[in-house]
Amino acid sequence: MPPATRTNEAATPAPAHAQPGQPRRADAKRNVAAILAAAAECLASNPDTSMGEIAAAAGVGRMTLYGHFKTRADLLEAVLTGVMAEAHDALDSVDVSGDPRDALARLTAASWLVVDRLRHVLEAAQRELPAERIHQAHDQVLDRVQTLIERGRDTGAFRADLPLPWLVSLAMNVMHAAAAEVSAGRLTSGQAPSVVAATLLAALTAPGDVVPSPPA
Image (cartoon, rainbow, N blue to C red; front, top):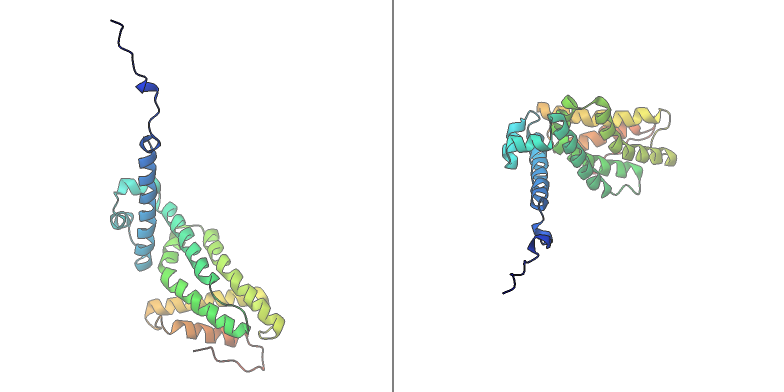
């Protein structure tokens, strides 16, 4: 009787869905997404949230968290990148056409919503990340303000007697001052957009011109 024919099972490749490593990669992606979402939410409420608290909120262990983000700075860098991308998506939807003064009020209102939601994240990032990285994050948003102020100057809606970089820096500092006042309880989050818009319109209006009231 001839010997039994040996099957070639060892040479047959496993199905694609059973390839080793794929489930692990999928789990890793889910873990990273959960960590970043939890970190953004936790830090938005409390900039002092610990890595352990973030891991617990994400439903992962500390070893898993540190396996993806070796330091708190690494995690904050990833969170800052994500929240700034969301901020740009939100600001992209703002209508900055028409009268530059009205457009400034709309951009201010939308920017305040971003600042108010993310100010604690930025506070945490400022403690851990290089100053250049924080400036880079601000610059990406301030480019929109600069473009609008330039258009207002070209049309005569805004003053042209002061340096443009000074006016852009003023806009950033007024927004930061509003955030500080809200944190101190001297200004409500609901009051801030109109206060910031009124302050900026007064600062940007040419001497002798009537300062317009910001839209309600």
